[in-house]
Image (cartoon, rainbow, N blue to C red; front, side):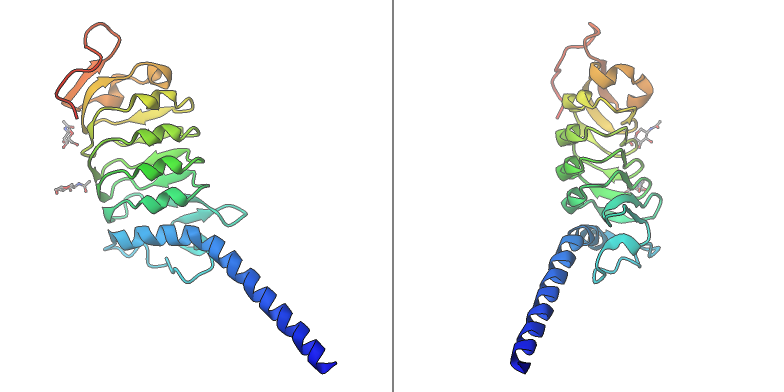
Length: 219
Ligand SMILES: *[C@@H]1O[C@H](CO)[C@@H](O)[C@H](O)[C@H]1NC(C)=O
Ligand SMILES: *[C@@H]1O[C@H](CO)[C@@H](O)[C@H](O)[C@H]1NC(C)=O
C-alpha cells in the first residue's frame, strides 16, 4: 500500500515537472530571441539591465510589452544609445506589433527574418547606421502601417513588392543611399516625394515617362 502511494506520488511529481519544462521552453523562445539582441549590442546606458534570461518569460523586462498570453507585442527601445546589430532571432516574435529601435547606432543589414513578423504594425528603424538593401521579405508584413527607415545608409533598389502592402500609411526612406526608380503603384500611389528625398541616386517616379524602368548602375 505504501509502495503504491509512493509510486503514484512519484508519477505526479514527474508529470508536473515535465509540464513545467514544456511551458518554460515555449515561453523562452521569445525571451531567448530578445536575449540574442541584448548580446549583439553594446548598451552604455544599461537600458537592458532587467533582461534576465533565467525568468520564465520576458514580460517583466523593461521596454518589453506582452499580451494576456504572455507573448511579446512591443519592443520600445527608441533613443536608447544601443550600438550593434539587429539579430535574425527577432523574426521569432510572432505577435510583435511595434518594433521601435529608432535613434540608436545600429549597423549592418536589416535581417530578412523581420519579414516573418506577421503581426507587425510599426517598423521604426530611422536614424541608425543600417546598411545594405531593404529586404524584399518586408512585403510579407501585411498588417504594417508605418515603415520608417529614413536616415540610415541603405543602398540598392526599393523592392517593388512593397507596393502590395495595402495597410501601409507612412513610408519614409529619405536620407539614405538608395538607387533605381520609385515605385508608384499600389500603396505607393499615395506617398509624396518627401518619403524619398535625399537619396542621390534615386531617379524619380517610374511610369511617368521620364525615367526608364530599370536603369543601370544600381545595386
Ligand atoms: C553613424 O556613424 C557615424 C560615423 O561612424 C557617426 O558619426 C554617427 O553618429 C552615426 N549615426 C548614428 C545615428 O548613430
Ligand atoms: C542626406 O542623407 C545622408 C545619408 O543619411 C545624410 O548623411 C545627409 O546628412 C543627408 N543630407 C541632408 C541635406 O539631409
